[in-house]
Every structure is written in C-alpha cells, then in structure tokens.
Image (cartoon, rainbow, N blue to C red):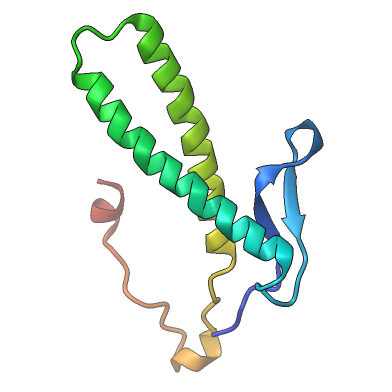
Length: 116
C-alpha cells in the first residue's frame, strides 16, 4: 500500500470560509498536532450534542426555538464531522493494484445491498 501524497484538509476554515490545507512530510509537527486535537474536540462535542439532541427530541415541551437552535447546532457539528471524515479519508493508504496479484479490488457488495 502507498500513502496519499496530498495536502491535509484542516478542521477549520480560512478567510471567507475557504478550506485550509497543510503540506507536511510528517504528522507530528505543531500544526498537525493542533489539527488532531481540534478534530478530537469536534468529534467529542458531536457526541455530546447527539446525547442532548436525543433528550430534546423526546421532550414534548420543547419549543420551536429550542428545536431550531438544536437543528442549527446539529448542522454545524455535522459539517465539522464530515470535514474530519474527509480529511482522515484522504490520509488513508491507497492500495497498490500491482501488489494484489491480478487486479482484484477486494470484496464488493451487490448493487441491491449497496443502494437498497
């Protein structure tokens, strides 16, 4: 397997909301560690918000304002979690097709299972 040689998508936005990227040969520099810690914090906050959301959703007395605030918070947290997933996915090793001995791409789900 070979590693991606791409820029790392950072868990924060730059000016005007544009994505920020980091170019580095190793993952233990200051900015890489800061990004790792920020991702961990974002995912932890997402888990806490999910628990809060479950409580609000079963509360029949929740006001429309409470639900709107919850939806806004959930949307922001989902955006952050998707950015973390994209960043981590980009850093996964890429399988070397020549090493598989015949071009087998691995197991596949039938289309009905994958999209059903």
